[in-house]
Image (cartoon, rainbow, N blue to C red):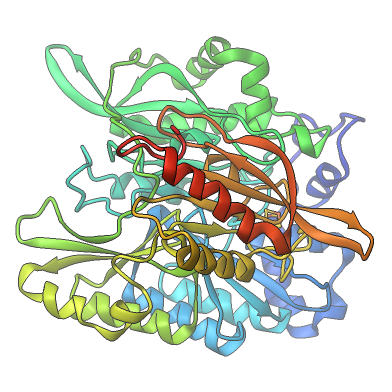
Length: 518
Ligand code: SF4
């Protein structure tokens, strides 16, 4: 175990319990303990205080707490190789009961792992340059990016090298492994906000500025976004950041969070609360003390929001090449299907697969002459469709009560059934995004959905039953969160209720009017 650092907040008598656990032993130290001890001696050998620290290894106990774990694997920027996909499929098949979930932060999740399997899984991941470390915990999580980076006709710069630099800088960096709470970063140069900037703690979006007579492409910086029970939209700082300054600025913002973020209540610890209290002017002043001078804001290059969807076959920046956006219903697949994606990436593309924050995938770099054969691939025709039905195609769901200890209700399979019902009942010709979450933590990002469904319980004569609060009108286009309707609908009535709601929209919408604007 590494020598524990003496953090400046260490003697504060008001620290919450998790803070005390982190001071006693850094979260990252648990990785060594898992490899050397727990994976050899089994579940019963795990010390109670280490269960919390397992998150730094990217591992949580799944529900019910009977010795099984879930693991999240970082996919930096949402781009993985076919070799990496094969290793992921192997882990799912050998240890994870054949289940692979794509998350809303472009990561991959496994379930049903035992502690005995973890050392081998870490090794397998490491052998192809993947890691689950710090995919959970109070540390810099998976860096979200543009899954089309490098091939995107709508990006002003290839952000892959910067994602790599950020990943190398933050991953396992003990200067930042004890933050007050989870910490989410995104970077994208896509002008349609592919990485959902406003819901991240720290985000970089494309911008330009004339400096010394020369036009420089760089980034604007957003801080303090986040969802959960008290959602905040990130705010822009008055700075322009050159590509080579991104890591320095990210380190500065993260240092401010580490040193000034709140460590008393877990529900009041995210960066968003510090930003809200300080305001962006003070936040910028404090940041400049760490980074030195930065340029002031330039011209924003964001033009709108693509909501993270890329369905169909589209031309790339490279003439004669195409990418294919495929639907993965509710983000769930099995090992064979992931292997099929790896094969498609190798046979048709350049061997890379994109994971989207909408829980879908992309195959990149398909030459024109292979497009028709790609379209005819059985898995593309019948399972991961290029043009899915509206509701199945635009449904997002968190993990829910099947595996999540914080969940109030079941979500994933329920969302799948609901989407299928709506496609059969109220077919719609325009996208309508429905996100379902099993509790206020909002891993399924319900606040930015056209219709956001949040699980709850209601008392009925038959006892407590699953129900949902319904929220409408979320978007990151003129960014705003959805608003709660004054209804709580029991799960058995959810389909008919939404069908009615959508029927009204279909009748009354103006030409081309999206649901959030309606
Ligand atoms: Fe679990 Fe709640 Fe997150 Fe869903 S939103 S995965 S129920 S913590």
